[in-house]
Image 1 (cartoon, helix red, strand yellow):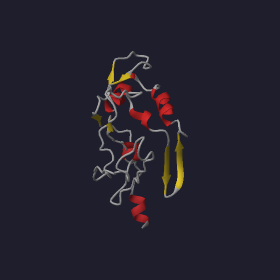
Image 2 (image 1 turned 180 degrees about the vertical axis):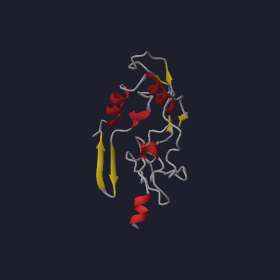
Image 3 (image 1 turned 30 degrees about the vertical axis):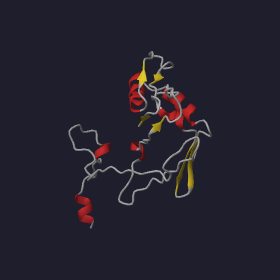
Image 4 (image 1 turned 90 degrees about the vertical axis):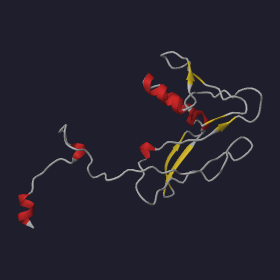
Length: 161
């Protein structure tokens, strides 16, 4: 055992190595996507107002930095288009509570999550903000300041994913 330890040499693992041409993260052997659905089929003013996601994957590890929520917004009520408040769709969420094994990890927003997210998004560069708006409702016009971007409306009896 001592001879094996004495013959070895120290090295930095891939992500810590400063060498440019070395392979990085060779210990990652696979990557896959998973979809998780909410326990309620619909949320809205005339139905359930709270949506719960149980984010778990028994077959592997979930990297929460790659988490992306997707939902469909339908305009069912009138003759006029629905005008979202912001092009980035964080205005739909009032609060987010994150629990891990029933332990409270984060309680975000306290009823003001959309407002907080809008303030933080103002610190993003113009390009990143535009990318987020395109992933959301899309946007029409606006200046470099970012305070006058207008979301694309959802036509009457239409929907947007």
